[in-house]
Length: 292
Image (tube, rainbow, N blue to C red; front, side):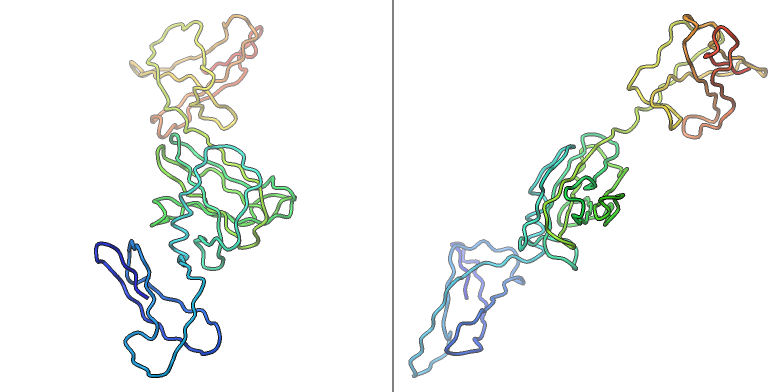
């Protein structure tokens, strides 16, 4: 077989038949030729041989076969996704493209992180509950596939055959390749992608001893140091000399305002606890905080 194009950059591969009087499948392997754009295919029967006997050849169903690697590269960047729920996703049997040697077919998605943060991916809510999935996440493109995370059967009951990955760190603008393969089956399944932005950097307001009225924590600003809270208001105080400090919100108006207070040293990266209080004020502002 000869592949030809107008530029003259042609390629030839010879293969011997192994039977007579019957059909057989013959494969012409051009993988070592590398990238080749061709415009025509020419078949030579009994090429370069002279035989006085009459010979009849039949051929049919000429088809291009794509290697597993080529199919993976074709599929892995074909579906762009954003955070959301995807129902009835289905892996096409025979489509190829799986990155793992112990299976063949896969369904690929590419997600471009909208900002720094984390993502969660799961198929834990697939219906019916017995659907079995396997999940891989990569970066650095289809040619490299740098492994980030993977899971098989990580979901809790009743969908224990589902897959789940949580708190995967992502960098804004970077592509993340998501692969679902058919190692355990190709049934349609449901999956979800969620994104959580990285906490906003802590902004410290410089303060000196005094009274600060009507201070407010901005909802959604993040920055809280404790896992049971999200948002916080931070101040930085530089001691003018050796001594002691008192901090309190006991005089807040109205009296029912509820505050919680933490004091640290050693900077934002370390946060060495010094003191904290929740509801330490006397009546009538018993929900106020005081450290002294």
